Each structure stands twice: as structure tokens, then as C-alpha cells.
Amino acid sequence: MRRLLAALFLCLLPLAALAQAVPAEGRFNDPQREARVHNLQRQLRCMVCQGQSIDESDAPLAQDLRRLVREQIAVGRSDADILEYLHSRYGDFILMQPPVQPHTWLLWLGPLLVFGAGGAVAWLVIAKARKILDSDDTTENISNN
Image (cartoon, rainbow, N blue to C red; front, side):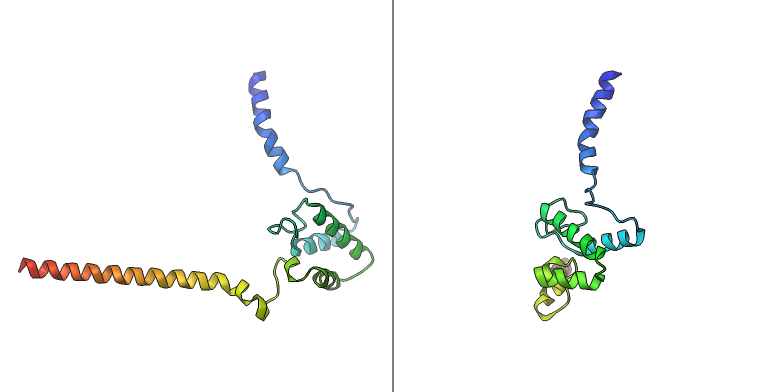
């Protein structure tokens, strides 16, 4: 029984490390301020991890940015002011949803273009396969007569 429990503990230990939450660098007593903090942090991309928001990342830069967001909220700056400050400092890349502008059209339309091109290729392949099958059926009918 002890061996079974020990084996179970060893199997679950890595999962506990994965499930560990990123520690907060200080919390507001006000739930509305805390909600603002997390809302802003989910809108900002970690410049190190790039696939995660600073709310999810454990990178040192993300920790610094989380601290900065908390400080800015503590002094009374609005969400728009905080986002504008970070955007001016780090550019469009810090935003999890960059704005639609002429230089980001490919970023926003790229997936649609790839999907459309894939659909066009699939349509051409199917049309060609049907044409070949139709010509084979015609040849069979002629040879049977």
C-alpha cells in the first residue's frame, strides 16, 4: 500500500508543478481593481514568451510589467492610459490583439488568405479528379458497346 501511494505521489508531482499559479506581486483589497489588473494583463503579450499574456507568463519581464500595471492602477491611471503608455513603449507587438492598420492587414487577413487558397486548391483537385473519372466512365461505356 505504501509503495502504491509513493508511486501515485511520484506520478502526480510533475502535474502539481504544472498547475502552480504565477504568484502575484501584491494584491489590491478592492476586487474591482484586482479585476482591472487581470483584464489589462490578459490584453498584454509577454515579450519573452510571445504566445502568452503577461498574466500567464512567469518570465522576469512579465513580472516587471505586471508590477508596472499594478503601480499605474494604484496611482489612478485609466486602462486606456496604461495601454497607450505600454503601446508607445513596446509597439503593436505588446498587444494581444494588435490594431487593424495597413501594416497589419497581412496579420489579420493572412489566415483567411491561406484558408481561401487551400479551398481553391482543393476545388481544383476535386474538379480534375471528377474530369478524369468522367473520361474513364465514357471510355468504359464506349468499349462496352
